[in-house]
Image (cartoon, rainbow, N blue to C red; front, side):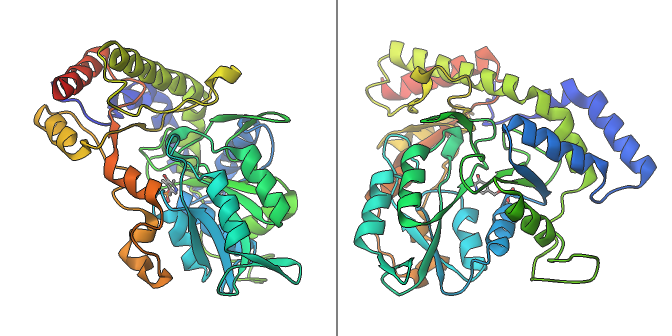
Length: 394
Ligand SMILES: *Cc1c(COP(=O)(O)O)cnc(C)c1O
């Protein structure tokens, strides 16, 4: 039996009727752009995130772009982020004309290391006229932590550092919708912790649209208003433009599809955790836990439900490439997220980083591998993955 990394067909089978009904209704009304479905989905997201102001947008990438544009971050500014993430996180910073400044990850969680962040801000930046500037005189404006693979960053530490240095926090929650964090002042949700956060509904994300879609969540209405205006070319009222935005609108069809799926999200995340539990039990029982670095679950003991939402189940081993070839021979899907650190990307050569600048990022890029995980993964298929893994390490 072939075991794919991800298979969405079962999810569609169970929801086909309500999804098709939404399609039919929208086609009948011909109301495609910023209608009641988008507004209803934004409200539902605000409720499920425990507050904030939601703005539906065209993708996760456009969500970040809209936030940066709404904040007026641009040439002469710099934004600090992790060296280990999907490209969009850094690409958006560069696209608005600002400079991405990278920081290494924590080797246990693969998330932005608060220690490395603090060392960077203390050692490589300095205060000037009430602002923080980097070595090249650029004004550091914000930090973009990424909740990678569905696990929240150490946000108490990151928020405290941001406050100390006067920086905004924009959470990349593209892979972490619904993930919870046990903060000092209570349990909070990914995307609802910083000044702004964003989600991606790319089809393979935990909550997937039928195409591209995304959402911005803002703590304050003032910023939310600017993002909402930015979503339509900085226009308010019609044909009067206050600043340059873009066409970042979320389609009614995508909003309606997401609204149908949203009530199932917690259930799907629970089933992903079940799959992760089986991997851990089986790998431990077969003595593989010592040979692999398994995903960390730092918030599990805090008793949270969504302490991890397992967008990906990622293991680390120095024999990553051989393991992957072995799994491929056994028709088991796997993927590398990501094969290079952002500082190693060709397009960022101009930033002047060098190999060795972020050792933990570079090690993760060499050694991590994502194994099949999705809510409907059959137990027999998972057994096959476990067998193939055990065979490889035998
Ligand atoms: C998917 C993803 C994005 C971008 O989202 P799109 O909807 O594909 O534009 C940004 N950051 C991370 C970490 C992602 O995984």
